[in-house]
Image 1 (spheres, rainbow, N blue to C red):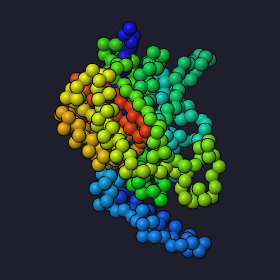
Image 2: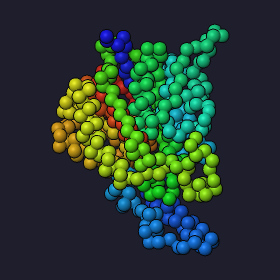
Image 3: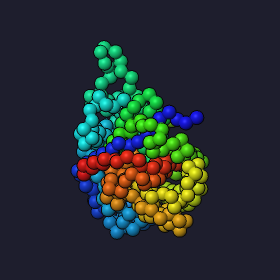
Image 4: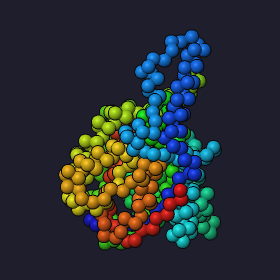
Length: 378
C-alpha cells in the first residue's frame, strides 16, 4: 500500500558559536596536557614519559590539515549546552521561514551530548524555550517529543524518525546539535583534533504522496557492534557510573577512538557494501545521484571515499563544510546542507550518509521537489 503521506524539507538553519579554535591552539592545548602529565609523574616519583608517549601529544596545523583536513572548529562558551545551540538555530529557522512556534507539531532532538545526563530531555527544553504550545483551551495539545542518539548517525536516525511520525504531526522540527568540545580527551590526539560544536534545525513537513522527497525504500540502516569499542567512552555510563579522581584526571569520562582502525574499516565499507545496499534498496544507480553529503568525521577520509565513488561512476557534487567547523556529530550533515543551500535545487537527487560509533550507518536518498530555504549564523 502507498503511504498516505510524504515528507519535504522546508528549510534548514545552522548556528555555530563565535569562538574559533585554530589547529595551532589545539596543538598548544595538547602540549600543555603533556607538560601536566610530566609534572605529575615527577611529583609522585614515577618514570618520566618515553619519547613514544610524548609523541602521542604532538601535532600541528600542517599535520591536522594533511591527515584530517580541518582548519579550525568552534567551541561554545561556559554553561552552554546542546539546547542553547539548538535554540539559536531554531529561532533563526522560524524567523527566516516566517513561521510561528504554534506551527510546530513535534520535535525530534538528535544529539549525543544531552544538556542534562538523565532528565529533562532536550526536546522538552526546546518546546518550552521556543514557546511551542502544549495546551489549547485547557486541554493538552498533541505534540511529539523525542530525543534520538545513535553516535554520528543521530541526525540521520532523527530524519527517518520524523518521516515515520508525520502521520500524527504535520510539521516536525528536527534538531541536530552537539557540544562535542565537552567530550574531548586531551590525551587522545585522534579526537582532540577533530571535534567542534554546532546546532542545526530542520523543518520537516507532511506533503501528498506524489510530492514525497523520500519513500520507505530510500532509507537504509545498519549497525554492527563487533567493533563497538573502537569508539567509546570508558567510564561514566550505567555500567561504570562512579567517576574517580583518576578517571577525571585521565579523561576516561571522555571519548576515545582508534582513528586508524576507523579509517581502515569505514572507507571501504561506505564506498562499497553500504553504497551498494543503499542504491539497491532505492532502485537507483550511482550516476543518478546529483549530490552527496557524508558525515564530516574526517575530511581527508571523506575525500578518499569520494575518490572511490568517482571511480565507480559518481559524477555529481559532494557537499561539505570545508573543514571549517570540525566534526560536529549530529549537526554535521544539516550544517553542510545549510552552507551549500545554492546547490539544493528542485529536481536534484541527494544522498545523505552518516556513519560512526557502534559501528553504525544510516543513509537516505531524497529527490528535492520544492524550493528549500537555508540560513547560517557563523
